[in-house]
Length: 226
Image (cartoon, rainbow, N blue to C red; front, top):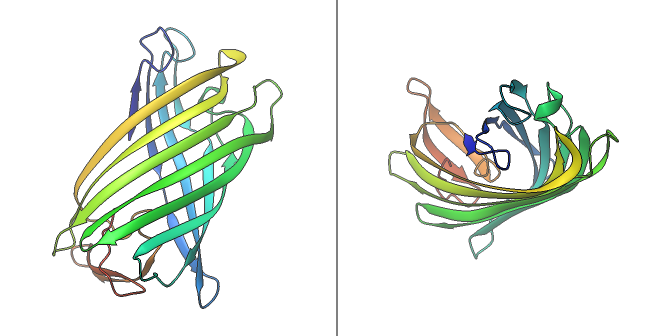
């Protein structure tokens, strides 16, 4: 969840975003997986489009398709790469860009025992959409670090930096915007979190507790669920 206080320049506007991120791995050959990662933002904002005005609903959807090798190299570095698409699915015009977009995205991570660290990068340019909104160019960088205990509980922290040039609901002129958010998640018991699901080959689960017993990559390493 990201909270942005002062979301509109020179105001006390607030905006909070909760992202729903289903990740689906699909085997497409003996050596490669295709990973579908969908980001559906649920947004509440107050005062962004004007004093006393608030909006709640879904924002634009980002769909990524990562191509991932099933085998991890001797260096222990895991990488995935593919296209990302911006879909103008916002339920309120003030919550979205009204633009279709496309661009590259990639993840690189390294495992050292129970510690995993790496970075996700993405850049999207608008290619079509409403003429009433200015063109959009958005870069997203997310470094992350996680540690998995012997009981498969994961402690993870990540920071996200987003720099974008895009239309806002109150003006047709583009505005330079930037944001920074930090999240900390302790003792998570999720089956397969994004980024790690990309390289997971199998997960043995204790269904009575809904906690993963183990999660192994193709080379047999225990993976954190971050």
